[in-house]
Image (cartoon, rainbow, N blue to C red):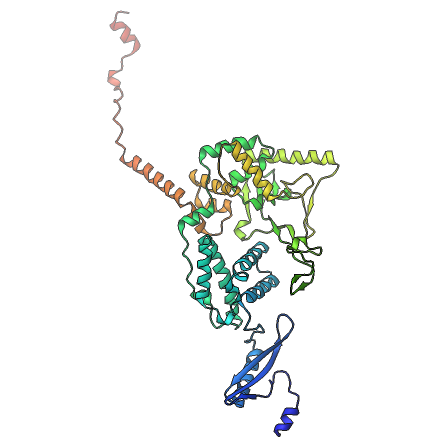
Length: 453
């Protein structure tokens, strides 16, 4: 076939364009390989030293594409664009908890999209670029744990780029990350109330408007989201058991309007203010891990408080003429244990404000709702409860969680060794006087006769 005939023939998808000599010793050709995520054609350009080399490279690309070894993602996209693409894929796969995905988006938006690192082309991203971002975060006062969380998100996202063939290696694997410190791990877990503080708080709680809420939190240590998401169908008064398998969480509202180059067409910055908003609000969902799904014992003091709470709801039902329940955005209806009078879940900030007032009444100057969980775990360990049982009650999935309470375990070990030492080193008791022998025993009649009685 003549060169003129080759030029006139329309080439098919997957064949690539006829190589052109752009300058002496440099030939270029393009090929269409499917479509990108945004629906546009995925065009690949090949440059080689000859027309034959161009054709060979085009043929290799086509073979790799047909074998699934070529991604349709633009290799020149920035880190910011790739992380958004990655999070969209994770959202579509539904393999991340909603709150976890929300946390990922928040960190990517704050520490990737806004800083300079987000504008770096993915293929040019180096470990040093990530290390500079980590240093700037530390210089801004962020904790090591926050930096490490952000690093793990990047590592997963860039790992997906490697898996899809966009990158040859993962820069995050080579980046140096600040080492986590034990002291910081302890600070994350909160502070336990002392025994006198806990006693004063419990006295105040029992005289409060809603003692069941705070007795459960202080004595059993569930997470705030687990308590606020507790419904009556998970409370078994006759068996004196509570089943924890749901938690209350909030999702951010998303824009439902069209997106333009200048932003949302509604001109509102927040999705919550968009007239066509969707996807937000309060939801009840499963806990993050399987071990978080657990049964809790119901001590007598909590049993009495829950019975009083049930009777309180019955009174509302009689007064209002109906039993108020809450229908979640997914259409599920729930009768919550700690609901507002209209049946809706309590606001977590209001819940925190109520707890702060209880602390003030108890004379405790500092503390958070999370400290109740830390207090419950500490008190259980102090009472000598087997650490494995404590893990079950708290819903911990990893033994490493106990390391945050290492100081308590160390004190218990010292106390146990001291008691053993005291027992072994204590002097033998002094021998008691021997009992009188039978020969020394005198009958009453003989005793009287000897005394002339």
